[in-house]
Structure formats: C-alpha cells, structure tokens
Image (cartoon, rainbow, N blue to C red; front, side, top):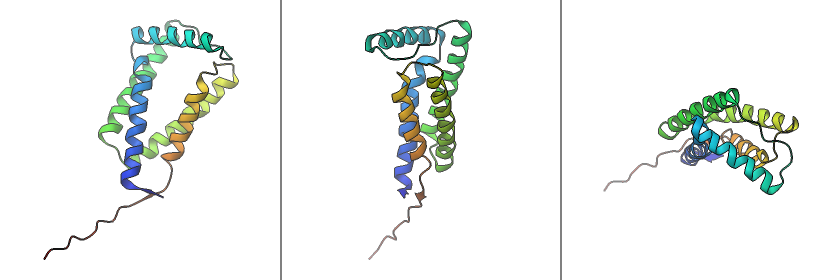
Length: 140
C-alpha cells in the first residue's frame, strides 16, 4: 500500500513524463520534426514494423493527441490527487491497449518501451493508497 504522498509523487512524475514525451506532438512543425527523427531512429536501430507515414490527417490527430495530453499533464502537475491518478491510470490502460493493437498491426517496435512505461504507470496509479495519519504534536 502506497503512502498518499508517494502516490501524489507518482501522479506528478507520470504527468512530467507525458509532458516531455508528448509536447512535440502538439504542433504541426514540431510533429514533422519528431516524425522525421523517429523514422531515422527506426532505421538506425533496425526496428521491426513500420513508422506511420505522414500526411495532414495523421498530423491533425497527432496534434490533437499532443494538445490534449499537454493540457492534461499540466492539470495533473497542478492538481495531483488520488482521483486524478485513477483517471489517468484508466486512460493509460486504454492507451496501452491501442499501442498493443498498433504493434500487432505492424507499428514500429520502437513503441515497445513506451508501452511498457504506460503499463507500469497504469499499474502504479491503481495501487491501493493509505491515508496518512497526522501525528499529534506534543506541546509542553
């Protein structure tokens, strides 16, 4: 069972991770750069599967995803709570299913480490949380 303060640190750490990972998806220009870098890395390491080709439709949905996650991340950083963490854990579980589906459909295996992180953070945010008990202060 996690201490409440530890749990809030996990929620904030997951938010910071998301902000770092998804910020480049938020604009067409940063996404174009990111997509090129991911394609280069995919080829460099000889990853299996395929990198999604570009295009305005893919860019639109990448920007939508990036924008929503950036705002959600900032919210979690500023308003971390057990409730917010539970919602984020549920969202991560859903997103993990879609990442697994993409891998099974032939997406680049560069996605595997991100999928592992998503599952770990989902599990951590669904662990039981104990309420911290304030110790009474002794006054003389």
